[in-house]
Length: 368
Ligand SMILES: *Cc1c(COP(=O)(O)O)cnc(C)c1O
Image (cartoon, rainbow, N blue to C red; front, side, top):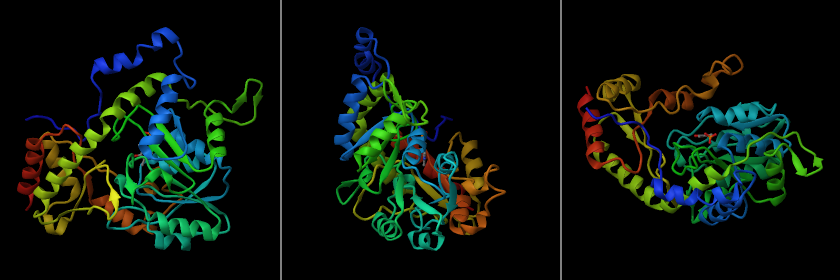
């Protein structure tokens, strides 16, 4: 039986990449904002339709340094239904994460619960466009304005997503994108921050290079989080193909939905209105009473067929060993419940129709 993994990194042809890195053998300029980096900055600004962007070594450091650059203090309201990075970025800045529950129908933060969590110590909100699903950006902006809070979006999943023709990176004070190998668009490892206020960019760029402002002035306690030229080269190549890849992903998701729509006990999120999706993931929810098998059993059964899905996200962050003594995950019951039901199925541009059909037939036949 052919093995199907949950994801497969997008890559250009070897020749295309070699051509892209060839000039580096003349310049010997490998990192510290070289010409490939500068070219990628320009191209991504256009592609993502944003006024400002800085590129960093990975998405996590982009988020960590954005929070640092904002000089926040106290509490940050966020979602426990995310990847470790979101909450860790808050904690590693000496800030206190406060977990808000999510909405059942799209997995994003429940904007109606945010205000009840605001205290006099709250300084920011860090929501996640989870699976590329857009948060309620309008309502969140209203709340932030009313209470004088910053909004930083974890847009790691949302590369290329648009809302009413506006690039997702335009919402909030800043948005972080991840260009990790497993994401829709990759620079091997990599990440970016988009923001409206250009002073913030100078701060982030400086922090990502040890807080070095000029040759003789170091005015921030930064680290090292620069994107190098080999990453930028991969980014330039992958950017040429990303629209094509997203179109192929769309086809895969459409096929999954058609083939799974009548399977009792299996549901999925609907497409959001006015949102141009990037088809980053295909999460399904397993309803044990109707399907006759719980999520964990289905993951194991798929494995026996050599199909590797992922419990993404399980456990929720407040149940991690490093947080569970401080938080009670039953405070966010929806996140907890969804996390017990969810699987992301294999999804990548080259996944073939036959493979999708095989996966769906197995899921259909496993129903008790
Ligand atoms: C991938 C991811 C990150 C971290 O990005 P890296 O580029 O891997 O550092 C942060 N948040 C979410 C939701 C992610 O999926």
